[in-house]
Image (cartoon, rainbow, N blue to C red; front, side):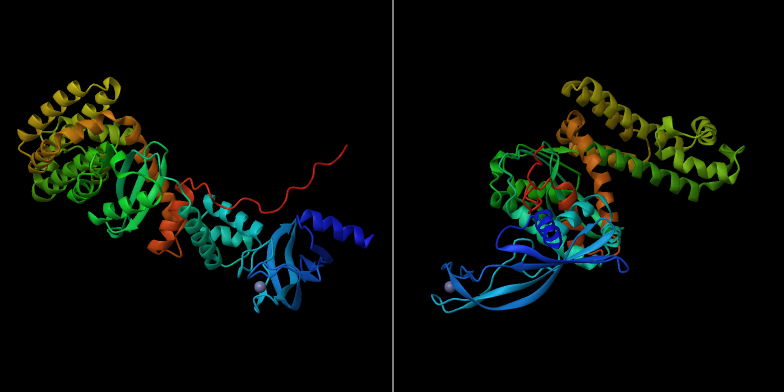
Length: 433
Ligand SMILES: [Zn+2]
C-alpha cells in the first residue's frame, strides 16, 4: 500500500526517472507534507561536459518549498548527486528538474508566485504564500529579466511615451508603450531626452526597427520631442489629449487660486449666498465633468456661472477646450479639428487671463501635433487606461518601493511578456475510462 502512495505522488509531482518519491510524511499537527525524493540512478551523465555513465561522488542534501497540497505546506527534499567525471576531471552537481539552480522554491511554486504578483500587491502575495516579500521580489526581477531578453518588438510602429513618478514629484520613470499591441515596451529611470535614446537601443536589441516607428504620442515636454528627433527618424509626434486637458485644468486652477487669494472680497460678494463649505465645493466641481456633479456642486456651480469672476471665465475656457476635443472624437476630421482648435486659441488669447494666454501660445506652437492627438482617439484612450494600470503597479510595489521594483512589476503586469514560466511538470496522463 505504501509503495502505491509513493508512486502516486511521483506522478502527482510529475517526476520522471531517475527521480522518484521515496517517502511521504504527513504531519497533520504542523500542517506539513514532506516528500523525500530520490535519484535512483547509480551512474549519471556529467553535468559539466555531458560524458555519459559517470560515477556519483556524493549527494548534497537540499530542500524546496512546493505548492501546498490542500491545507498542507509541501516541501521536497533530496540528496542531489554530484558526479565525478573521468573525462573532464570535474565534480559537479546535477540539476534537478523541479527547481532552478540555487532557488529554494520549486519551479511550480515560483510560477504560482508570479501569477499571484500579477494580480495582487507583492506584500499580499507573500502573505498568502507564507514567504518573505523580499523572496518574491527576487523572483519577479529574475523572471522578468529572462522573459524580456526573449521579448520580440519586431512589429512595433506606434509608441506612447510618458513619465510617471513613484513619489509625488520625485523618482521619475519614463515608460514607453506599444500603442497597437497595448503593452509596456520599456521603462527606465529619468525623464530627459536620453530616455528615448535608451528605448531606441532596447528596441533594436529586441528586433525592432527605428525607422518603422511612424507615430509617437507624448506630452508637451520638450525633452521627449528632442529625444524622438534624435532617435526615431520617421516618427510623427502627436500630443496626448489627456495631457492637453490636464494643462487646461492647471491653467484654470491657477486663475482660480490667484483670484480667491488676491480678490477674496470680490469673490465673497459674487458668491454671497454660499457658505465656506459650498464655496470649497466649487474647487472640486470645476475640475470634474458636470455629469458627475453632486447636487450641492451643481448648485454651487450655478452661482459661479452667473458670477462675473475670472474663475468663471477660466472654467468656461477649460470646458470649451474639452468640447473641441470631444467634437474631434466624434467627427474625426483633421480640417474641422484644426479650425475648432484655432478658434479656441483665439478665445484664449483674448481672455485677459495669463495662464490661458500662455496655454493658447503653447498649443499654437505645437499645433499640428495637438491636432493629430485629437484624431487618434484609440491611442489616447489607451494612454489613459495605462495610467490607471501604472497606478496599480505602484500600489503593488508599495512597501519595498525602489525604482527597480516598480519597473519589474510594471513589466510583469503590463508588458504582455510571452516567455514567463509555465508549469514545468509533465501533465498527468488522461485517465482511461
Ligand atoms: Zn565531465
